[in-house]
Image 1 (cartoon, rainbow over the protein chains, first blue to last red):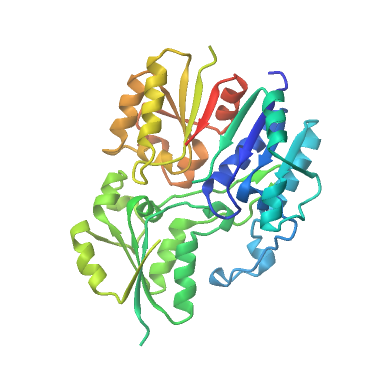
Image 2: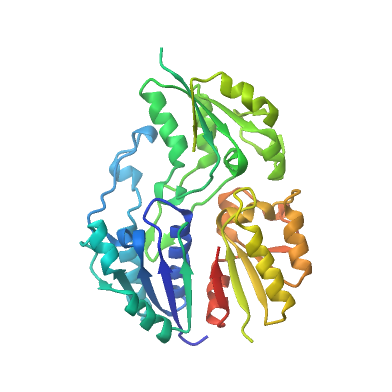
Length: 136
Length: 128
Length: 108
């Protein structure tokens, strides 16, 4: 199948909904297949790439921070950016700027860009298909 | 004497992959560790947490692998072994197509009509 | 016509899923291309044979292809032998492939 461009809009903040993991799995699958992907992070989803996320230990399970290896979605974002590069695909990760500002999560992992709904619109126009994964 | 608290868990698998735990079951154990008198009632689709054989291992994003996937069934059994009573609503288990033999050892079944009497045994009921 | 991909994440116990299933049925009836209902997260729970499965079985009869995310099934301890025959397990790639086909893609 030839390279396609798929566009995703995510809305959920980290650690709140299973939708986040499912969205990431779809993005991962698209990149593994060699497609280009644009992700527009809207509302709480702008915190997914926040650079200051830090893993923690888990005393309930008796695991220190290294053993717990607690997911920080920023590392998932970085891994997806690396995957795209490895596959010769393009992953454009756009953070809705106003959503970033109101949440104070301006420091995002390298490779993400600030944007606006106009950028989502551009991606909609450019992509072969778009999915919006809304919050509730 | 601490207050007797019942945690009613009704929403299952909400960010359990990201958190590597169910946050309410985790919270319950942390409260117990802090001296609380707690119990758990699994209802609605959260009854599935007692199903034996849950496996979400192998998740990876690019080269980033999840090394500590949640093991919810083992967690439920562990909670019981810590002396925290875990109950589940029998009608919800049936609605999920679950037989008692599908479940891990430890949780006890109650019928929905027994829930009011159950609530009466606790000082506080937290519905998650 | 490319058809539709409807990704259902909500299970009947949580509510809010029924109208989406009905949408799948009406799109299939309108014969506007193939319609796939892809069950993810807790929406896979009624794929395990139970009274709640009847709704999915009926939906399949109306021409909707029903797939269930293999990972979500495994995560919930739902083995293949417990699935109703109308639901087929599928990798998440199947959802991506249908997006690539150009299906209008909606999430619930």
